[in-house]
Image (cartoon, rainbow, N blue to C red):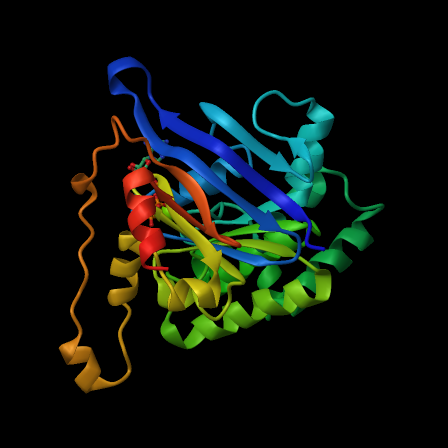
Length: 307
Ligand SMILES: Nc1ncnc2c1ncn2[C@@H]1O[C@H](COP(=O)(O)OP(=O)(O)OP(=O)(O)O)[C@@H](O)[C@H]1O
Ligand SMILES: [Mg+2]
Protein backbone atom coordinates (compact mmCIF):
# COMPACT_ATOMS: atom_id res chain seq x y z
CA UNK A 1 0.00 0.00 0.00
CA UNK A 2 1.55 3.32 -1.04
CA UNK A 3 1.44 6.09 1.50
CA UNK A 4 1.25 9.74 0.58
CA UNK A 5 4.01 11.87 2.08
CA UNK A 6 3.04 15.20 0.51
CA UNK A 7 -0.37 16.36 -0.67
CA UNK A 8 -0.94 19.63 -2.49
CA UNK A 9 -4.61 20.58 -2.46
CA UNK A 10 -6.09 23.46 -4.49
CA UNK A 11 -2.94 25.44 -3.81
CA UNK A 12 -2.64 29.05 -4.86
CA UNK A 13 0.53 31.11 -4.45
CA UNK A 14 0.56 34.80 -5.29
CA UNK A 15 2.98 37.70 -5.04
CA UNK A 16 2.07 41.33 -4.38
CA UNK A 17 -1.23 42.91 -3.40
CA UNK A 18 -4.20 44.60 -5.10
CA UNK A 19 -3.65 45.60 -8.72
CA UNK A 20 -0.08 44.34 -8.59
CA UNK A 21 -1.14 40.88 -7.42
CA UNK A 22 0.37 38.16 -9.55
CA UNK A 23 -0.91 34.61 -9.16
CA UNK A 24 2.15 32.43 -9.80
CA UNK A 25 0.49 29.08 -9.03
CA UNK A 26 -3.22 28.36 -9.20
CA UNK A 27 -5.39 25.35 -8.35
CA UNK A 28 -2.43 23.01 -7.96
CA UNK A 29 -3.37 19.45 -7.03
CA UNK A 30 -0.98 16.52 -6.73
CA UNK A 31 0.50 14.15 -4.18
CA UNK A 32 3.90 12.53 -3.67
CA UNK A 33 4.14 8.96 -2.38
CA UNK A 34 6.64 7.94 0.27
CA UNK A 35 9.93 6.77 -1.25
CA UNK A 36 9.24 7.87 -4.81
CA UNK A 37 10.85 10.38 -7.13
CA UNK A 38 8.18 12.76 -8.29
CA UNK A 39 9.15 15.26 -10.96
CA UNK A 40 7.70 18.65 -11.67
CA UNK A 41 8.37 19.71 -15.24
CA UNK A 42 7.60 22.93 -17.07
CA UNK A 43 9.18 25.81 -18.89
CA UNK A 44 10.98 28.73 -17.28
CA UNK A 45 8.68 30.90 -15.16
CA UNK A 46 5.93 28.26 -14.90
CA UNK A 47 6.05 28.20 -11.07
CA UNK A 48 8.19 25.16 -10.24
CA UNK A 49 10.57 26.83 -7.78
CA UNK A 50 7.64 28.76 -6.31
CA UNK A 51 5.93 25.47 -5.39
CA UNK A 52 9.17 24.03 -3.94
CA UNK A 53 9.75 27.12 -1.84
CA UNK A 54 6.17 27.02 -0.58
CA UNK A 55 6.61 23.43 0.59
CA UNK A 56 9.67 24.33 2.66
CA UNK A 57 7.87 27.43 3.96
CA UNK A 58 9.88 30.11 2.12
CA UNK A 59 6.85 31.29 0.12
CA UNK A 60 3.48 32.08 1.66
CA UNK A 61 0.43 30.47 0.10
CA UNK A 62 -2.76 32.40 -0.60
CA UNK A 63 -5.20 29.48 -0.50
CA UNK A 64 -5.36 25.70 -0.40
CA UNK A 65 -3.31 23.26 1.63
CA UNK A 66 0.10 21.64 1.78
CA UNK A 67 -0.14 18.43 3.78
CA UNK A 68 3.02 16.67 4.98
CA UNK A 69 2.74 13.24 6.57
CA UNK A 70 -0.93 13.88 7.32
CA UNK A 71 -0.48 17.37 8.82
CA UNK A 72 -1.30 20.70 7.20
CA UNK A 73 2.00 22.64 7.08
CA UNK A 74 1.18 25.87 5.28
CA UNK A 75 0.02 28.72 7.48
CA UNK A 76 0.58 29.03 11.21
CA UNK A 77 2.92 26.60 12.95
CA UNK A 78 4.39 26.40 16.42
CA UNK A 79 8.14 26.91 16.49
CA UNK A 80 8.58 23.25 17.46
CA UNK A 81 6.62 22.18 14.36
CA UNK A 82 8.63 24.58 12.24
CA UNK A 83 11.93 23.18 13.54
CA UNK A 84 10.79 19.62 12.94
CA UNK A 85 9.90 20.42 9.31
CA UNK A 86 13.11 22.29 8.56
CA UNK A 87 15.01 19.16 9.48
CA UNK A 88 12.76 16.70 7.67
CA UNK A 89 12.40 18.67 4.43
CA UNK A 90 15.54 19.94 2.72
CA UNK A 91 15.96 21.73 -0.57
CA UNK A 92 18.84 21.53 -3.01
CA UNK A 93 18.71 24.95 -4.63
CA UNK A 94 18.55 25.68 -8.33
CA UNK A 95 21.62 27.84 -8.67
CA UNK A 96 24.63 26.43 -6.84
CA UNK A 97 26.57 29.62 -7.60
CA UNK A 98 24.07 31.88 -5.85
CA UNK A 99 22.77 29.66 -3.06
CA UNK A 100 25.99 29.12 -1.11
CA UNK A 101 27.23 31.74 1.34
CA UNK A 102 30.41 33.02 -0.34
CA UNK A 103 31.95 34.21 2.90
CA UNK A 104 31.60 30.92 4.75
CA UNK A 105 33.88 27.92 4.54
CA UNK A 106 32.55 24.64 3.23
CA UNK A 107 32.86 23.25 6.76
CA UNK A 108 30.53 25.96 8.07
CA UNK A 109 28.10 25.72 5.14
CA UNK A 110 27.61 22.00 5.64
CA UNK A 111 27.46 22.31 9.43
CA UNK A 112 25.06 25.25 9.58
CA UNK A 113 21.92 23.14 9.96
CA UNK A 114 23.64 20.94 12.55
CA UNK A 115 24.54 24.06 14.56
CA UNK A 116 21.05 25.51 14.24
CA UNK A 117 19.42 22.35 15.52
CA UNK A 118 22.10 21.13 17.94
CA UNK A 119 22.32 17.87 16.08
CA UNK A 120 25.61 16.76 17.65
CA UNK A 121 26.83 15.92 21.15
CA UNK A 122 30.28 17.43 20.79
CA UNK A 123 32.43 18.94 18.08
CA UNK A 124 34.15 15.65 17.33
CA UNK A 125 30.77 14.19 16.40
CA UNK A 126 29.94 17.16 14.18
CA UNK A 127 33.27 16.87 12.39
CA UNK A 128 32.68 13.19 11.88
CA UNK A 129 29.22 13.78 10.37
CA UNK A 130 30.59 16.46 8.06
CA UNK A 131 33.60 14.50 6.85
CA UNK A 132 31.51 11.37 6.34
CA UNK A 133 29.14 13.47 4.19
CA UNK A 134 32.06 14.97 2.24
CA UNK A 135 33.30 11.50 1.38
CA UNK A 136 29.83 10.35 0.37
CA UNK A 137 29.35 13.20 -2.11
CA UNK A 138 32.86 12.72 -3.49
CA UNK A 139 34.61 15.77 -2.00
CA UNK A 140 37.87 15.75 -0.07
CA UNK A 141 38.48 16.64 3.58
CA UNK A 142 40.99 19.26 2.43
CA UNK A 143 38.08 21.09 0.81
CA UNK A 144 36.50 21.86 4.18
CA UNK A 145 38.53 24.99 4.87
CA UNK A 146 37.91 26.44 1.41
CA UNK A 147 35.30 28.91 0.16
CA UNK A 148 32.58 28.24 -2.47
CA UNK A 149 34.22 30.35 -5.20
CA UNK A 150 37.17 27.95 -5.17
CA UNK A 151 34.97 25.17 -6.57
CA UNK A 152 33.58 24.20 -9.96
CA UNK A 153 29.84 24.15 -10.62
CA UNK A 154 29.66 20.39 -10.13
CA UNK A 155 31.55 20.59 -6.84
CA UNK A 156 29.31 23.40 -5.60
CA UNK A 157 26.30 21.27 -6.38
CA UNK A 158 27.87 18.49 -4.29
CA UNK A 159 28.31 20.95 -1.43
CA UNK A 160 24.61 21.82 -1.76
CA UNK A 161 23.72 18.14 -1.68
CA UNK A 162 25.96 17.50 1.35
CA UNK A 163 24.43 20.43 3.19
CA UNK A 164 20.93 19.02 2.62
CA UNK A 165 21.76 15.38 3.36
CA UNK A 166 23.75 15.94 6.54
CA UNK A 167 20.42 16.86 8.17
CA UNK A 168 19.18 13.31 7.50
CA UNK A 169 15.97 14.56 5.89
CA UNK A 170 13.02 12.40 4.77
CA UNK A 171 12.09 14.53 1.83
CA UNK A 172 14.31 16.45 -0.59
CA UNK A 173 13.26 19.06 -3.09
CA UNK A 174 15.93 19.03 -5.77
CA UNK A 175 15.44 22.16 -7.86
CA UNK A 176 17.10 21.61 -11.24
CA UNK A 177 20.06 19.92 -9.52
CA UNK A 178 21.88 19.17 -12.75
CA UNK A 179 20.90 21.87 -15.25
CA UNK A 180 23.80 24.17 -14.33
CA UNK A 181 26.28 21.31 -14.71
CA UNK A 182 28.35 20.08 -17.61
CA UNK A 183 26.85 17.08 -19.35
CA UNK A 184 29.80 14.96 -18.21
CA UNK A 185 29.04 15.40 -14.51
CA UNK A 186 25.24 15.30 -14.73
CA UNK A 187 25.07 11.52 -14.55
CA UNK A 188 27.37 11.52 -11.51
CA UNK A 189 25.08 13.85 -9.58
CA UNK A 190 21.97 11.90 -10.60
CA UNK A 191 23.62 8.65 -9.49
CA UNK A 192 24.57 10.26 -6.21
CA UNK A 193 20.98 11.29 -5.55
CA UNK A 194 19.79 7.81 -6.51
CA UNK A 195 22.31 6.18 -4.18
CA UNK A 196 21.07 8.22 -1.22
CA UNK A 197 17.49 7.42 -2.07
CA UNK A 198 18.19 3.69 -2.03
CA UNK A 199 20.24 3.83 1.15
CA UNK A 200 18.01 6.13 3.15
CA UNK A 201 14.55 5.61 1.64
CA UNK A 202 14.32 9.29 0.70
CA UNK A 203 11.43 10.84 -1.16
CA UNK A 204 12.30 13.37 -3.89
CA UNK A 205 10.54 16.21 -5.58
CA UNK A 206 12.72 16.67 -8.63
CA UNK A 207 12.30 19.90 -10.57
CA UNK A 208 13.34 20.19 -14.22
CA UNK A 209 12.31 22.03 -17.35
CA UNK A 210 13.04 19.19 -19.72
CA UNK A 211 11.05 15.96 -19.92
CA UNK A 212 13.94 13.95 -21.34
CA UNK A 213 16.01 14.55 -18.17
CA UNK A 214 13.37 13.24 -15.80
CA UNK A 215 12.30 10.16 -17.75
CA UNK A 216 14.96 7.94 -16.25
CA UNK A 217 14.79 9.17 -12.68
CA UNK A 218 11.08 9.64 -12.03
CA UNK A 219 8.35 7.32 -10.82
CA UNK A 220 5.70 9.87 -11.64
CA UNK A 221 5.68 13.25 -13.37
CA UNK A 222 3.60 16.41 -13.09
CA UNK A 223 3.58 18.89 -15.96
CA UNK A 224 3.08 22.55 -15.10
CA UNK A 225 2.15 25.29 -17.56
CA UNK A 226 1.90 28.96 -16.51
CA UNK A 227 1.21 28.14 -12.87
CA UNK A 228 -1.30 25.35 -13.60
CA UNK A 229 -0.57 21.65 -13.15
CA UNK A 230 -2.00 20.29 -16.41
CA UNK A 231 -1.20 16.58 -16.15
CA UNK A 232 0.09 14.00 -13.64
CA UNK A 233 0.83 10.36 -14.45
CA UNK A 234 3.32 7.56 -13.99
CA UNK A 235 6.42 8.20 -16.10
CA UNK A 236 5.92 5.62 -18.85
CA UNK A 237 2.18 6.30 -18.99
CA UNK A 238 2.89 10.00 -19.52
CA UNK A 239 5.39 9.31 -22.30
CA UNK A 240 3.22 6.67 -24.01
CA UNK A 241 -0.21 8.24 -23.58
CA UNK A 242 0.05 11.98 -23.00
CA UNK A 243 -3.39 13.59 -22.89
CA UNK A 244 -3.02 17.31 -22.33
CA UNK A 245 -1.99 19.25 -25.46
CA UNK A 246 0.74 21.08 -23.52
CA UNK A 247 2.31 17.77 -22.44
CA UNK A 248 2.15 16.67 -26.06
CA UNK A 249 3.90 19.84 -27.14
CA UNK A 250 6.67 19.27 -24.57
CA UNK A 251 7.07 15.68 -25.73
CA UNK A 252 7.23 16.71 -29.37
CA UNK A 253 10.20 18.90 -28.43
CA UNK A 254 12.13 15.91 -27.04
CA UNK A 255 14.63 14.92 -29.75
CA UNK A 256 14.30 11.49 -31.39
CA UNK A 257 17.67 9.72 -31.83
CA UNK A 258 16.76 8.71 -35.42
CA UNK A 259 17.67 11.65 -37.74
CA UNK A 260 15.12 10.72 -40.43
CA UNK A 261 12.23 10.50 -37.98
CA UNK A 262 13.50 13.64 -36.25
CA UNK A 263 13.40 15.63 -39.50
CA UNK A 264 9.90 14.42 -40.36
CA UNK A 265 8.59 15.22 -36.89
CA UNK A 266 5.97 17.90 -36.51
CA UNK A 267 6.24 20.11 -33.46
CA UNK A 268 2.98 20.52 -31.58
CA UNK A 269 2.02 23.97 -30.38
CA UNK A 270 -0.32 24.42 -27.44
CA UNK A 271 -2.79 27.29 -27.73
CA UNK A 272 -4.35 27.91 -24.32
CA UNK A 273 -6.77 30.53 -25.63
CA UNK A 274 -8.97 28.08 -27.50
CA UNK A 275 -11.20 27.19 -24.54
CA UNK A 276 -13.66 29.33 -22.67
CA UNK A 277 -12.91 28.75 -19.00
CA UNK A 278 -15.33 31.41 -17.73
CA UNK A 279 -18.54 29.42 -18.20
CA UNK A 280 -17.15 25.88 -18.35
CA UNK A 281 -14.61 25.83 -15.52
CA UNK A 282 -11.61 23.51 -15.64
CA UNK A 283 -10.59 21.10 -12.89
CA UNK A 284 -8.15 18.24 -12.29
CA UNK A 285 -9.81 14.93 -13.25
CA UNK A 286 -8.51 11.38 -12.77
CA UNK A 287 -9.30 10.29 -16.30
CA UNK A 288 -7.71 6.84 -15.91
CA UNK A 289 -6.50 5.23 -12.66
CA UNK A 290 -3.49 7.31 -11.57
CA UNK A 291 -3.61 9.57 -14.63
CA UNK A 292 -4.83 13.10 -13.93
CA UNK A 293 -5.51 15.83 -16.46
CA UNK A 294 -6.63 19.45 -16.21
CA UNK A 295 -9.50 20.68 -18.34
CA UNK A 296 -13.15 21.70 -18.54
CA UNK A 297 -16.12 19.47 -19.44
CA UNK A 298 -15.74 20.09 -23.14
CA UNK A 299 -12.05 19.19 -23.13
CA UNK A 300 -12.63 16.17 -20.89
CA UNK A 301 -15.23 14.78 -23.31
CA UNK A 302 -12.73 15.10 -26.17
CA UNK A 303 -9.95 13.49 -24.10
CA UNK A 304 -12.22 10.56 -23.19
CA UNK A 305 -13.01 9.91 -26.85
CA UNK A 306 -9.33 9.51 -27.60
CA UNK A 307 -8.34 7.35 -24.64
N1 LIG B 1 9.35 36.62 -4.88
C1 LIG B 1 8.69 36.82 -6.01
N2 LIG B 1 8.04 37.99 -6.24
C2 LIG B 1 7.34 38.20 -7.38
N3 LIG B 1 7.23 37.31 -8.37
C3 LIG B 1 7.85 36.13 -8.20
C4 LIG B 1 8.62 35.82 -7.04
N4 LIG B 1 9.11 34.56 -7.16
C5 LIG B 1 8.69 34.13 -8.36
N5 LIG B 1 7.93 35.04 -8.99
C6 LIG B 1 7.31 34.89 -10.31
O1 LIG B 1 6.57 33.69 -10.33
C7 LIG B 1 6.67 33.05 -11.59
C8 LIG B 1 7.19 31.64 -11.38
O2 LIG B 1 8.56 31.71 -10.97
P1 LIG B 1 9.40 30.41 -10.63
O3 LIG B 1 10.72 30.87 -10.14
O4 LIG B 1 8.61 29.53 -9.74
O5 LIG B 1 9.54 29.73 -12.06
P2 LIG B 1 10.30 28.39 -12.43
O6 LIG B 1 9.29 27.48 -13.04
O7 LIG B 1 11.07 27.88 -11.27
O8 LIG B 1 11.26 28.90 -13.61
P3 LIG B 1 12.79 28.50 -13.94
O9 LIG B 1 12.71 27.23 -14.74
O10 LIG B 1 13.29 29.64 -14.76
O11 LIG B 1 13.53 28.34 -12.65
C9 LIG B 1 7.58 33.92 -12.44
O12 LIG B 1 6.76 34.73 -13.25
C10 LIG B 1 8.32 34.75 -11.43
O13 LIG B 1 8.69 36.00 -11.96
MG1 LIG C 1 13.06 27.65 -10.88
